[in-house]
Amino acid sequence: MQPIQAAQTARLQWHRSLYWRIALGLFAFLALMLAAQGALFLWMTDRIAGSMPARSPRRLAALVGSDVSAALNTNPDLDLHHYLPEQFGEILQTFVIVMRDGRTFSNHNDVPEALLEEVREEQRFINERPRGFGRRGGGPGPFGGGPGGPFDAGPGGPPPPPPPDGEPRGPDGDRPPPRRPPRRGEFAPIVVSGMPVGRVIVLPGGPSFWRILTRLGPTMAPVAAGVLGVGMVVIAFVVFGPARRRLRAVQDATERLGAGDLEARAPDSGGDEVAAVARSFNKMAEELASRARALEASDGARRQLLADVSHELMTPLTAMRGYIETLAMSELKLDGPTRERYLRIVTDETHRLEHIIGDLLDLARLEGGGTSMRRERVDVKAIFMRVAARHERELQERSVRLVQRVEAGAEVVVGDSDRLEQALQNLAANALRHTPEGGEIILSSSVGPDVSTLTVRDTGPGIPDEHLPLIFERFYKVDAARKAAAGSGLGLSIVKAIVERHGGRISAKNDNGAVFEIVLPHGSDPVSAS
Image (cartoon, rainbow, N blue to C red; front, side):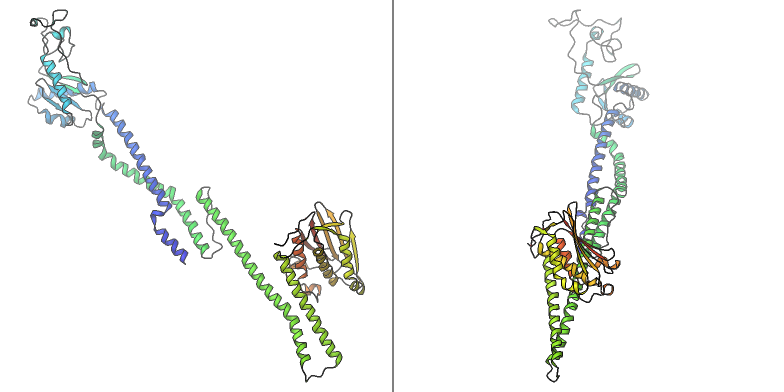
């Protein structure tokens, strides 16, 4: 329960959650994206606002000049300080109205004083300009010196006054033009009762950024917040919701596996990182389950081995104990032949016990790698002859014929001579126990591509098919089918261990009797003891 509680505790620390880190990162990304879009929108508005409601500063000046002229003609005492912000305050572009007396008005109150002073200076230049100058050097317009200007004398007007002595004159005898301040923006006249009384000047540069932000910010902020909120909700449920659920499924599967559920698996559909993690987890779970099953099987085999060993050792020990106790009874009078028979039984059981213990030790050394395997050329005919010589007496008593067959090219195998002979001796003894009188045992050697095959075949009843996969297990006997009365049940296990230590394999089948085949690779290198 402790790992599960620790996982639940860690789950509460939201600031360490990958889901929330990604969500906060996405939130920051969307915020930056909205800020960039807002800046772009403001820049575009900045570019567009100068043309509203007219398409150019010149048209804006003409529109404002016409409107103010009409208003002053209607009400000569109109307060332009209030009229302009009220009528034209929504226009983001800044313009200035300058009157002939030097008064200035604007639709916004943030016009720099230095700029207003330049506008007044230009107005003073216009007011102080000599009459008639504009006819030759000035340009036309309401405040120029040309026709239509406020100081134009017209065709019949008085001539301009002569300049004082010593003052420079122009080529036609006129006074030189006074120095004019730089002109700013586009302008249009304000005419009252047919006379120009001022002009409208649309300042260059367009509206300021902060004015646009102040004007559009209250409208854009709720829209941006709504877009951000809706985007976060949609992305959370559409993008991160499925990933979070799948990660939770992997977490739950991990907790179940840690609690002992070896069948716990995580959904691994998809091709993203979450699916890759789920597949890795499932692979790990499969390996853990396989190892757990192997450990359970090994533990079961160990328990079964202990039970089998105890049973196999207890049988001769019980017999020995009974006969020894009988021989030790002083009140029991036994004749000589009976006592001798009892002692012979005890001796046989002792040899049987010694044989079982020897086989157990031998099998343990072979399976555990605790014995050395020599690598040498082994004469197959010599091994077959030694096997036949060892069982010669029993073969003659039971009229069983032992046949040796060695094909051309199969006279030699590579391995440990003593261990290979031990394996063939065990197989021959097993075949002899199950071959009826007058039967036949065949020892043969053949050669194939990269392998040599040693075969032990008998003419007995064979092995039932259901027992074939189990005959190489420790202490396994097919007594009911083969009527085996002797043997420890370890002989075939020892044969299998010897063959596998040589890098080969052994198999059993039925073909008019039992057939055991030992397949050894050419030039096999036996495993040496560590």
